Length: 253
Image (cartoon, rainbow, N blue to C red):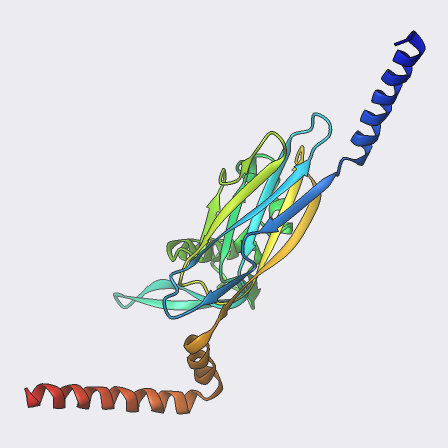
């Protein structure tokens, strides 16, 4: 091979590498293992994984945060007061749009690279997402009620945080497993994947997971919601008939 041909081949290799580098995808790509979860009579909860890949350029530190959030619902909190020697629940405080379920997974604790205001504004704090309906008692702190709401939901297994529950590989691939307990409500669950670099939000990718009843579970739930009086009356009749049948069977023996 002549020197001219060798130089031409080297130039083509350099150009090819440059084109390949220019065509390399950038940003954030995500997916969910299950986008619809069916609730049947033997439903014991669900497991799903949010996965994806990001392409990083430069020496900036990358962090990924994944949030799975259930439908908003109303919540009422009360605090105990000692009145005439008795502890009584009083001073109700009402919240709207409180997440019925909230799970967060991140590459490291979000408080280490995000400010408190950023965490609240991006919906990474379930207590901040709940809206106060009205006010709180004059001698109380609204933040205390929000902390109490989060504490009660965590005790019920409905609020979960995994500060290092997201595995991030060197090639930018990541996955975040989630467990949805059986006591989590049905409905449309929102999935948000955040990509940060040096504590600055670079990209946000939304998604959705739908938990829905099927079969006899859906029929019973629909009947209870559509015809509550008829459903209650039928349930009482069924209980009475079952009790009578059991008593008759045991009496014959």
